[in-house]
Amino acid sequence: MDANECYAVADEKTYKNALEYRRRQEFLWDSMDADLFADALIEMISRKKDDVDVLRFGESGDLRHQADLDRVDRVAERLHEHGILTFIYTASEWMDFSDVEHITVTASNDGVPGDQDYNVVDEKADIPDDGFYCPISDPESEKMCGECLECMTKDGPDEIYATLQDR
Ligand code: SF4
Image (cartoon, rainbow, N blue to C red; front, side, top):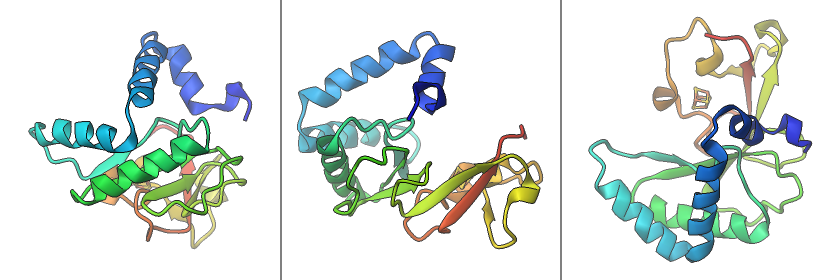
């Protein structure tokens, strides 16, 4: 994917601390195996005042290589034992997702064989009658992500549509 089309790169350009923060996260990620990372995450989550039900891993499915994907799947397996779902949006079509068991994979481009496809269209009229319209981009919906969860669970709709208009 061209960097100009990447969701994560856009935020790194917009928010001046985003890239530095991501580099620190990358260092931590590379310093631990999946189980130690999961242990640390579970401990951190246990100290939060609010319950954590779902974890989005990486802003734009920031997977560098297959080993990253395997490790995220192991972390997701551990989190699942604590009732936490893990999902990623990803456009990394060069990855092999066939062995993923514990992550909900939401594909942001056509090349990814995800659990579901997330399609961005220009306007509502472009959404098929049986297409699921993501509530967060539907100006008529008052639902927020936390009440929806449709693109975060493996049994959500196969095709999800969003529009670029602001709410
Ligand atoms: S509103 Fe639902 S479909 Fe849209 S991003 Fe949030 S969980 Fe996914």
